[in-house]
Length: 464
Image (spheres, one colour):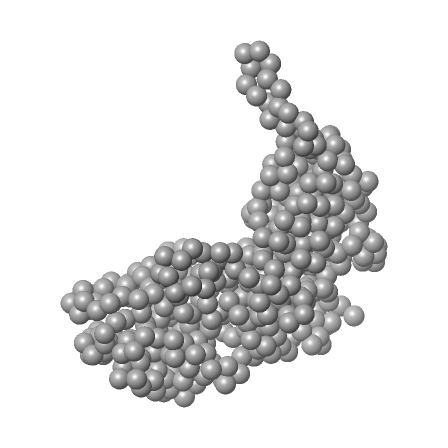
């Protein structure tokens, strides 16, 4: 069966959706945490110019995606707690047949009320008039500047006149978003399944003589053919020494026989406004067979990732996963004569500067994990208050709890010109990344569908 036919008939094309009840629950929980007699104002992302009079594909503010899923620009969501009463108010682009012919059908006033839980809705042009009334009645307002400069300017004029306490909605909303519900996990799991299929198809398509952008095209095709909205981030397809560039995105080099290729790519899945992200990295040989040196480095990174995942459980901290990965990597680099043991002291020649021996940080220069959700680098603090009521209480690293989702992605990167490294390892960059959900008893890997062991990768690529 051809790839397109297989994807068209695949269950990947029919994923879950966020139920209306989930949005209602989130709005209710957010409202409950607002201070008495306040309003919260959440604004849409602006449209971004790509070139002259063309725009980038629109992506809604993640906070609006989370609270009510409204997909359009020039929109504002207001949650009011005036006089202890919950009210959801929206400002949207009104229906306009002439403009809709050019840019698509709008939800309009009635759509905002019928499908996006607004008790009241107004044209965006009436923002000043209606918000002015709400500000006058409120003791404080939740608003975060710098999300949409045009709306910021309109709000600032009203707020400077009203002079009400300014509060940050992120303090409530981003803490809510850190803990994923079952509905959210289902969307991340589906995005992960699509991304896994894309990685497998890239492995099957790979061969010497192609370009990195050929594999990027395979990834993009699978994402969209399976119903994903877009990549979660700019895809990285880095062959050979390009893999030592952490955020390499040129993707235009030749795939050479004997090199490894590192692919860090995934999609987001959800509604038209924005979806839930996945994040996967795999590394494999262009010709389908690992060399001995490649196998040694790859297996070391894989062992470190497995150790990090084993440390992911309720009550642990993200730093525990990082420490577990580092312990394995450090021991392995010592074993491979890439870094010296602890007993080695830098030696100073007379009149010459100290030549420091290489350390793990030289070859693994990033963290092992980041939160994952609606944003691929999702919101949520990495620390928390120590539990006391003292406003000056110190912060401590956040304890992992069920519902948290994050990546585990150790790596090793040896530049081709780094003469501190044995020659056979130069030009090798390896990162292995999976997405992990903390459960009541441990963790679940959400990205298990992609081959990860040397044997699994070589067996899959042997089919092409």
